[in-house]
Figure 1 (spheres, rainbow, N blue to C red):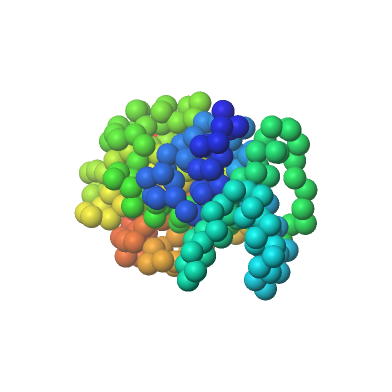
Figure 2 (figure 1 turned 90 degrees about the vertical axis):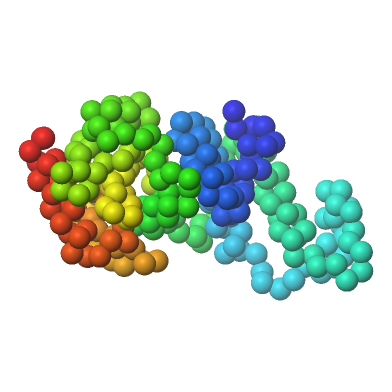
Length: 256
């Protein structure tokens, strides 16, 4: 249910990047399983982006602060207190109130759009880094592709082949659900020595069939195969990562 206070506050903190890695993973699992919650998250992101682009940069006048504090019920600060944290909480409360109104009323909040949603490469990189920060980089632990692939059925729109490449030094260690463009997508997780390799599979979109970029110390590669696009993220050196991709492509071609 998306209308309870705790869920909406957590969702607001998630959209603002205020949750811990473990809380982020828990929220993304809920987003993958609850369409209504994903829709509310989309409205919050749109609202947050619009507010960032619309609100003036000058500080609010003291009289306005006083009226808002009195209305919402915050206790005024002692002299010399740093208000930055309280104002962040106050802003989150205001956004939360708007979200509650939209959730209860069933209506959408329409504002001019000034922000942009994360690109697919940004989303898969963020998911990979969150996986590294979590106790384990997967939701299901298994080296058996016949266990990992069907696990995605009913959880994501796709259930990709999950070849085990342990005989070549790249064992399959599990799978997880990530969120890309607001939708749950499957990610296969491999390991090479101490390096984790994330393989995220999404429906193919228009654009270059292959590409490579470096961000946050990680390499991101993509390629199209039929109606699917594969995104691979790892901090492996380029030569080892290319070897993994060649092996992976050959195995899924053989299985297909």
